[in-house]
Amino acid sequence: MENESVINKRITDFSKKVDIIQTILIFLVSLLVPTFLGEIITKIFGATSVIGTNSQIIIGTIVNIALITAAINLKGWAKIIGVVTMPSIATILGGYVFGTASTYMVYMIPAIWLGNFALIYAYKFIMLGKNKNYFLAGIVGVIVKVAIIFAFFEILNAFGIFPEKLVSTLQAAMSTTQLITATLGVIISFAIYKLEK
Image (cartoon, rainbow, N blue to C red; front, side, top):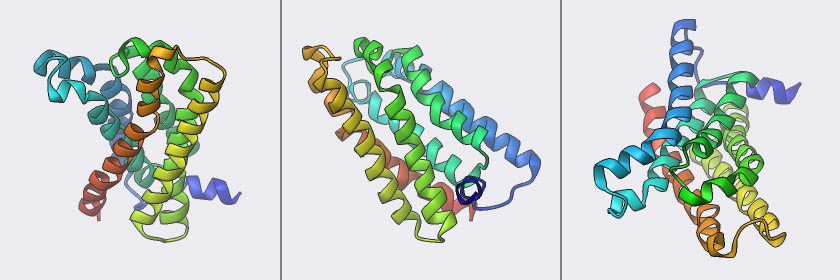
């Protein structure tokens, strides 16, 4: 039951109307950003521009902001599971973030879900459950998230799931890029957290 109560913690008890609006906004960001933002960036700035070539960092950072905001503001398993699962499904369906590698990302969905949940749970458990520092929760969440995703990738890679020509790209996406986007998400979400306080 302790885990159940942690999932139901949030920073403030919002009114039902505010809760519904926040939930809808976070869900929309989690679904639409991975699905469409990559294509929008490419069309506006070009695929070879600095912004175009770094679209994965932009999209990943926004998704991590949504995950952390959900951890702090939303409660209940249904909402948390929705936010955890939506971005990776949208990324695969959109196919923009990883391009031709997106089809191989299907194998990574369970790890991405676990990693996203680990980030949310770190905030729920450390910050909201134990009343510890925002950044301590962020550091633990980022480390666990990246470790889960990268370890899962390496296990699948050991079985030869991914084509050799994509391994280095996917390896960077599942390690360095995950670390950068989750860290940026923690930093930027702190401003949102402070505004809400």
